[in-house]
Image (spheres, helix red, strand yellow):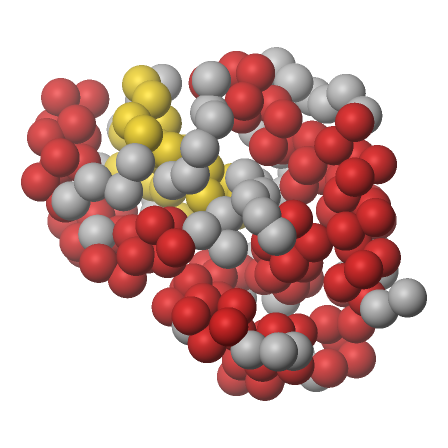
Amino acid sequence: MTVLARLFALIVVFAAAPALAADADSFAIDRVLGKADAPITIIEYASTTCGHCANFHKTTLPEIKTNWIDTGKAKLIYRDFPTGPAGLSVGASMIAHCSGPDRYFGVLDLIMKNQDKWMRDQNPLDVLKKLVRFAGMTGDDVDACLKRQDLAKDIQDRAQAGSKKYDVESTPSLIINGKLIVGARDYADFDKALKAAK
């Protein structure tokens, strides 16, 4: 059984299990971009296999980062919300997590910006392994990462919690200071929502 096939089997099991921390506001696997004490909190629910999410990361997020996150006005918490193909989505998310806290957003950025390359390849895992070598991860590191059932479960539990707490049903979905905004909108829409949240 291939690593991705094992991952898919895990996802089926965990999808049926209840979330352990459905009402939690934070999770051990959360990574924060920006100042921890920024007055506005943006929670992004997205999937590594979602084309709209990849487009958001290429076009809109850089402006949000420049104007809101880098200036200390907002912080971003990225939370995986796996979509199909499930094994591939969770697997790519796991690789970003296994890169470590300091490299997490850089690896996530690589995965999102190169989504069209690795998802269309006959062997997406090989392409992902080549991509993350830039972040210092070896093929063995990736293989070991994809065997981590605890991480796969944490990703699924957190997604289920987002669905329960914020009514997240699709990707991308952003929560700005508790308010749900659905869809890959342009920067102007998010800028307006962020100004309203001040």
